Length: 489
Image (cartoon, rainbow, N blue to C red; front, top):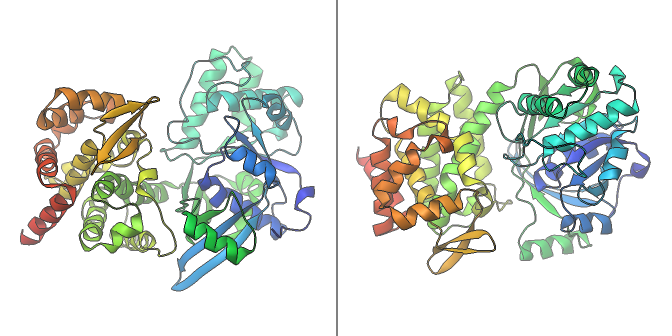
């Protein structure tokens, strides 16, 4: 791989929690791009929760990986291969926590980035003296406390902290948890004052489809084109957005903003968040189980099918766009939807539905529930496409076998993993209840949704009816029947 000359000499300015493909395909790529233009001039130390896995690949490849960018931008086809060299090393939190704390004490460190999944930003009552603390907020607090001690509370040694987990107000929530955990650990008042005064916790939003490693055939073709093998090769679309809430101080530290129009730093990013969360992510989440149970592995495959493509378009433009619980101009949301549908049809990116089902229940709550509630209040009727998607979610969650703490569902004799912490709850309900009873029980469960969804006019009976139809006729036939009914109406 050909890398950026002199990259290895750049100081380690970023501590990143997470090795996932989203981080590689967006923040790490942007930092590499800025380094090449002499703008940011800093490298990334990555922290992985456990040993093994891709930590070994990073070590073998000196932190290098190839990002293959494929898509359409401004009507032009984009095919670009970039060897990203922004990562200096990957540390295991489990076995190299002392090294992580040494990074925290270096004067060059300026930024913390994270993507620990949507359930990673949670309060866990724990001691930060553990090696390491269990939770991400616990690890972050330990890093900040080590830094505070190393520099005697100097205000200019605070960090800019940018979580990219897809939850509303992720920076504010993370800051609140870290502060609460500091109190639980009995840390002194001077540190807590420094924590609040010297550090900037930024709400942020990332938007780029990064399906990660391609299938074996595509990988082989790309490696032949590149002339080398890469165990960390990552695919991404051309489109990107990283919206960060911040002031001039944040903009000064995050100087990589200048290298791409997709990086936006401004005081309020709510419009970006709502459009992405409700329309792109909400559409993904309400479609993933339905598409898989209809026999489609990838987003593009579903979009190329007349029935599924029509369903996904109608779900986004007719149900979810109409229920965004935030004031957005109609022409803005309509154009955003058009761009997203084009991205879903990207012929170069194979975004797998099964990956989107990870933490299915939590994603539904975060991405879709507020939209469904707003739609019901605004129109006093059932968002029919969303009801179909919710029924398919209930069916997808029907676990039939458990092995090694993982539940599996079954489709046409083939098993699929249900990667959801509520999988056991659903397996129990499916064993005990009728589909109608299960629907009512789940929709009424406010611990899942933070709302009683049986109060939405007509929603529970319609979801139950679609679920019964799916069990009798199949998911694909149910979707086709629903679309025909919508046309007739």
